[in-house]
Length: 448
Image: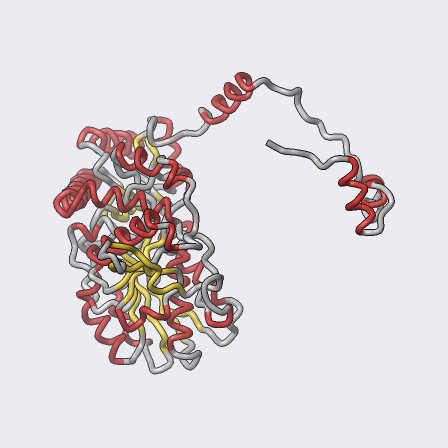
């Protein structure tokens, strides 16, 4: 409830700042702008307002009403009902940053469990809590790499198959450091990542790749990782966590940092967020990560407890020593992914990954039988695949939408050389019948 100031309080405040009246306070604002006439609608009752907002919400088309083959970093996975039931509990829903960790044991335990699960999934040594999304996590990896070499290495190599938004955010973060050079992503997007080896040198601070890459392709980065380490640089892998339920973890490539988007782990698409940035490293880099590390311990009575083992942010240490100013731990999103992973377990996550893999390959097989449509390459892929189309993707997607289908991503938006290329995603929610219907509409388009 809003409680306005009393007349006496207003007079005291105006006197304190040397102003006689409220009108005098606004003299610096041009007269024609002081009291504009706002064309506001008539006031509504609560019931009327609810009805009006419902009508506005119904204008949005969503994956409850339409089939969705759109991915490109955000995916329409099934979220068990228990996830939402748990994160809606008051003690979790309203919890904030643990400023006093000793009395925030529930929050700390949830972060500890989250970190433990991400470490198990990626094969890394430690995981922080946490970043806002995959793009900011990638950018923070750049900040870590820059400071790790004490600003003596200034070259960042980024594969062109890293998510375009990740690359853009990295450039935004590093824009203030004039001597930083970000390169590598101006090459052929469909080329092998091994071609990056030729530009790695002693000035390289880090090399970033995606696994599977933005086009869904699966590469073994072992040799690239060796080349990165031979130059003394940091190897960063942006990973799809669902794929890690089936594929070998990035740690086996020699990754120093693993980042990624946590949205596939129990978070709805939600028209763009909030999401969760994954960030895991080796022990060597542990003291240079941003955010927090929660540890488990035993108190003087032998009872289990949780503590903030490491907090490299400005509210816990001197500002000049902080590695970031992360003000929230994205705790609710981290909790959602923790509940999701706990419910599925190793076998459940593997089953989800296998369903995505096999359904995507069935879709690719069916699409390539349609005149004018073909796979853009023959590299193994996970649950996304690039399709060469006989017409602009925007035109195809308009037809698909008329048939109740959200089509794929237009790769030409980010890669001019990939005009008329569509990136489609298939998750476990898509059935065989959905894929067949999708292909029927594409056949109709091809025949017109």
